[in-house]
Image 1 (cartoon, rainbow, N blue to C red):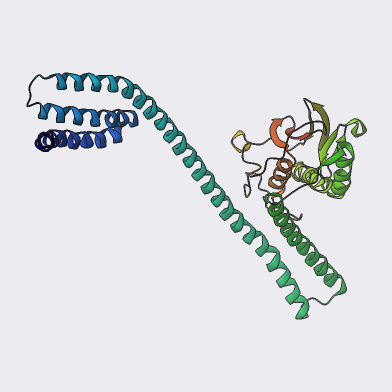
Image 2 (cartoon, one colour):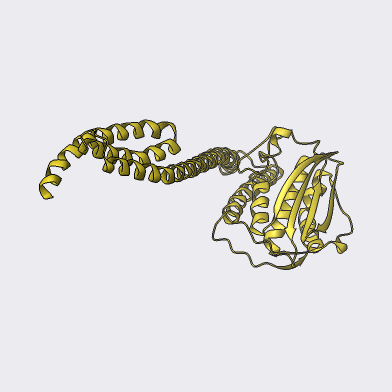
Length: 348
């Protein structure tokens, strides 16, 4: 018995090895074309190699052993081929999904990096301008070029305005960093939306008066109660108001309305900016984005990050912010959870 096995083993190997090598080559080719085909090939190669070995041992003769081996191989193939095809299709779908997810993640990272670079460039420019003005005016005061009391007072007032601009930029950067931090943990309590908006309107009233813009809130005492953090929610509403004031011409009007639906409350801010280009509607909340009516700081404070901060704080509350064009300008909608809802903040 051992003698027969010793003689049969080399012969079986001689016939099985070429089949295995050819199968390996075929599997490499199929792997580049179809994962399912590669899996089927992987399942059939061992069967083909075993069948080749049995054929070699039988001396290419029709024997009962050969018939039995062929029958077994066919039965195994009937079971393994469908299973291999199913697994191959599943692996192919998972690989495709993973590739698409990786591509989307890479695009998001590239977009965030581009936005960061633009933000740094714009902030450097915006900070350089008031710094240059402050330096020039302080040099003029120090060198005695400006001596008249009225001129000195004017220079000091201009230095104060430029300092306020820089302070506003720094504050915006701090709030943006805080709002987008994964460590931000807000304590959400029931808040009367009308009171939050009233506080925000009072804080922005001087800017509205200076711009000649009227702010109108319709029956704020009847507005719903929301679940939020007072300071952060007030900041988000203030930023929406400041953006509306900045883009509404003198004599224009900003209308505030609110309501509730389906476990959520909404606040809408309608300005008179004349509308936003459709291509820019999805980008106005992006960090560093500045459209045709650029938010580059002029005489007012701030770094042009108000909408990005508002969106970040809204998402920290489990809410959303959207915008759409509506005569005579555009309407921003802030959606927030109510105390009875189970929406949770979305952190990134």
